[in-house]
Length: 179
Image (tube, rainbow, N blue to C red; front, side, top):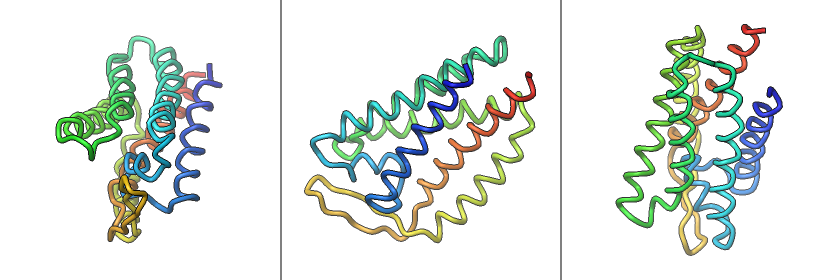
């Protein structure tokens, strides 16, 4: 089962690395959808979010038997919702769904970390550190006409990274404590 965890982590790292390598630091992880070529963006972004979410959910639910599994399930389901609502700039309703899914995903997973691990301290530290880095990092946003615009910071991107990385660290730490 630990292989599922590492598949999710590897796909997450490869996806983020590919975006940053090819396009620079996006304003947010979701903004990478608009940085991708139009012909593949829906497929690539949606499949990426599913491959990041599903293996992690399966591993994490199995690992945390009886420990508020609904938090894990909904955290992962909302991540898939983020992927499904990827074209958030195209429609105001989709934008609302996208933002709600992103906040709920982060909220449910961080709540599980707070309740069941001591890694909540690391989560807070990572959010503070990554916020600071994001305030000093120039971000990029994309448009339908393949033009890119630079924004003065990438706070959202780095806060999302903090949420993902703190989740991976907490889940792996919880796993190691169960051995």
